[in-house]
Length: 300
Image (tube, rainbow, N blue to C red; front, side, top):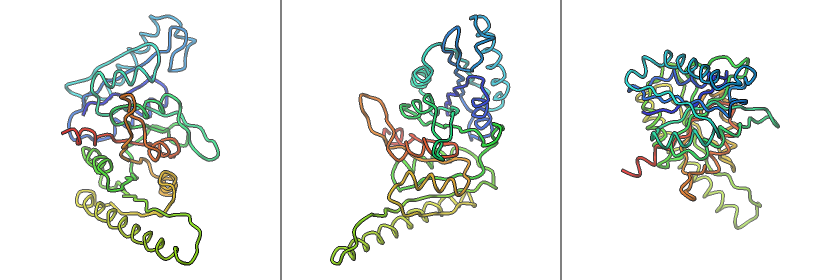
């Protein structure tokens, strides 16, 4: 797997690097590290006072890249690329990811609380929305930006689609610790309608049938995963809003990571997030892995 790690040396970026470092990929990584400076007087890592000259900026970036190279030396024995760009941060990340044909972008998220929800920073949001590959957006821990360890509670949003199945296939390219807890979460539709004689019975019957079908899908996938990941359990929630239901579940479970496939749609050759994926990305309290692995599968 070829991974692009966007890192500016900040504590949030270091959280993302730590999480990536603790993930156990079954094959050696091909890792490219990209640092983007906004300009000679203002840099993304937020310390412009000491980095007003180009030479000092280059020295900082070289030092930071050397630290990351030492961190990942065992995971990337054959390929470690160090890149330093100047200009628009999100645009640079997207352009580099396409040029190197990255399978995954890893980036930290700057979130803040608003009406009890977490909102992404503009850079993370744009990268996750427009990337043509999978994206792992790493949110900081709740307290003191402590370094991440490998996620222990993982929620997998599953609806039986090609996108969600391939998201699971992508997840299975990693080796997970035996004590990891996996929740296969499926959302059954729940409709808001006026109860009146003559229509209620039929609508309720359709809704009950959809619930049973959703349970069957979740239980089947959980059973398949449990053959390799024993601590896997199915969960089904009835809701009118899939994204909100997924977010509520991750909050209740105190999930460290939520994984979901994005179907998106093509517009002027850019990929845009589907509404459910975008809602989860912007509101989930944990890190979010958006899989676009299904595009590769569909193209084969």
